[in-house]
Image (cartoon, rainbow, N blue to C red; front, side, top):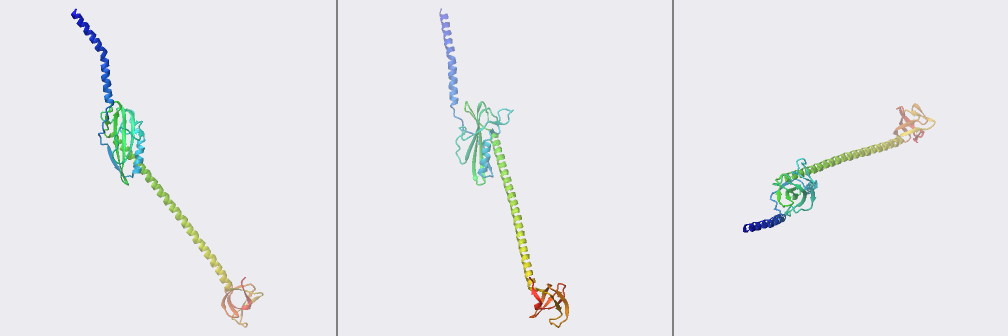
Length: 299
């Protein structure tokens, strides 16, 4: 009887223990999960990547923002069939990084729901990738950029630093974007210089045409003035034979020999002037003398 009672008591104890065992296991798992979920993330241990560019901060900022907003985390992947990890978004801030303590402008992009991404040390489970860009002005024409990348598991808050490939790839994208910006700026400057050069050539041609036109106008005016002077001189130096005509004398005397009879209205050039006679030349080139009263001015 004693042996039967002992066996009966042990069976009851096992039954109670078997009833309490699931509760104990669940409680232990709950405590473990709670303690892991409240475990603070570790500080970023990798130095990141820094590079100095020979460009003003405005150009570097434009390049960095273009990469921040390109929806890609460069230098990592989740599935081999998808070598480009898309789905990233630009954010103003993120708890994945401690506040930046130094000078400069800070930009972030994150990619949530990433599963064990490549190039993050010992990455596992599902979590969020964070990339931080810091722009630090050095001089008016030189600017530094620092890139950091980290992956943090969602459940255990385990921090997985990058092996450097993400930072290197993001920095390359920034350099390529900056090179494209600078090349476009140079092309725009060259186009502007060509445009200005063409405009200068056009203005020079216009000025040359204007100068030629002015010179031509001046020459025409001078020619017209000369013609007027010639007309005036001709009016002063030429006379016309009165009707009914006159005899061209060999000397300024009435008794001088007649060289030729000139018809009325014949124009002659005055060569010599005396009080009563004029030495003249006919249109044929013959020279002689005519009395002053037989000539009249040209009309």
